[in-house]
Length: 119
Image 1: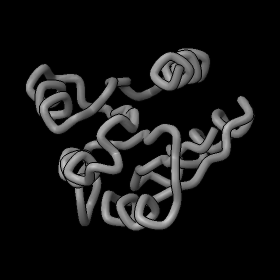
Image 2: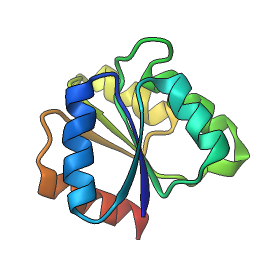
Image 3: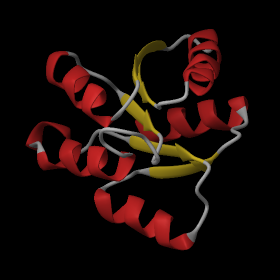
Image 4: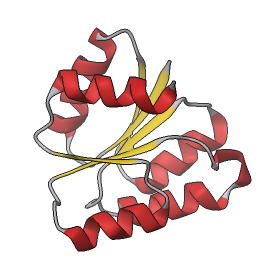
């Protein structure tokens, strides 16, 4: 299974890489929403995990852009963020986010959520 992780924090990208590759997933990384969109144009993924607060293009705009392409209507997009307000959650859901996980994440729970949204 291929997962695209989109986050401007190198530490978070490293933690995701370690957790997900250790669980047998292939992980491709992007450092902002625009890089994420560029990866989606040339590669295919089973799941996307994105942060909300990023430079260039934030996670909400990234999700809206992904969903505007007919090709990605059913692609699971998990939001992994420090944000926990209802307003942000509602924005994420309205943009097309599949699920919401607050940082710091529990590796086992993240893998469980990924398996649940894909199967």
